[in-house]
Length: 362
Length: 160
Image (cartoon, rainbow over the protein chains, first blue to last red):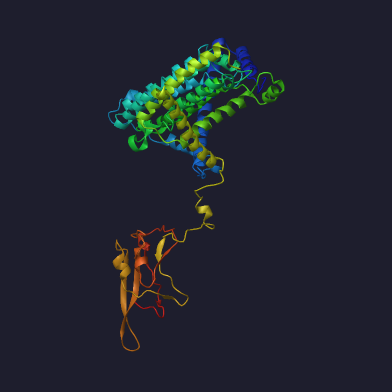
């Protein structure tokens, strides 16, 4: 098996050929799907655990605390212990809950998360799907997740859950606009919606540098709107502890709660990964036009590491937001979207169109 | 036009205040060796407790097992929730006069709110606040303490 950390196409191709020589085409496809599915499951579980730990440690550092220190060295095994505890919890069904929808809701949320994660290219040759409408697919599918949240709130037979779900719904529906429009701004520059095409278009320079002013504005609008869409602080009014206990997942326990919890953190990863792919070049190393020697030095680090380096950077920015800014009220959240982000975004699209039309980008 | 300028300045001011906040938290984040919290059981040996910390009421005794308590009962009167009970006895002095003295200064730690009123009220300064804060016990009855040590007596020259 040819293994090359810089380009995974040879690895995937050799696996495909090895399987094809042994099995029929249908069986090959089935085995490949199983392998890919298991790989995503493993990645989501492990990366989710890592993210929870990282969030707690980063939060602690921002507040001059130490964070988890007891389980394992520097509390490294803390999230694993938490996960085992969650798995052993009893699954409690509220009285008069809508049983079918109550059980369905966590699966909708987690399935949407998996569907979105499947189009993200981690490294050259390490992406499952590559639609020609990739960016559109991401925005379309990620907006289905809100149905899971609304169902969870509706079926729990609990006022707090319902109010939390409604807040979350209003918030996600509003901020979907900003996410979509900021991505459209970058599509104008890229000229394609195919994710592999977007990454390839940043071979000479990342879009955030290529598109200069409008791209930077679009990046920050995307990060703000993406933070709001994942229901994270400072936009976490869907789970306002003092008002709504835990919002839409108040009545969930055990593995179903773990699904919501995991989906929330993986959505954080997805927003960061989309920001990385569209603005910061995806797995593409830092390249600057004609500086060939500089570009070659940058090529020494494999694309996989570049991708995670950038994703972790964007995630750190979002955690920084979360642990610095005070929470917004409901009316302030909607004000921010409809009075500020949306007009800025629409103006920004015009600006980007003018920049592309007159060839003012690098 | 004026409203547009106001709109843009509002946005820029908002961004500026957000950046100010982020500067503060960044300073905290990039000095991770500075903590406001401590790893408690590990640092017991190096633990420094502030002098004015109110851990429990204690009655200091000198090396001759003498204290300053006259048994006047002012601390008992001043205690807002009855955590102190004073039991006195009469001593007969050499000249035949009777004198009141402390028999048992009973202190219910489990009821104490550490308000410091007894220490403030004490006319002779017999009781003070100690710094010990590890009060966990297996049996609630052990929280009731007698502050004057057995066999102790009042210091020379302390008058009420």
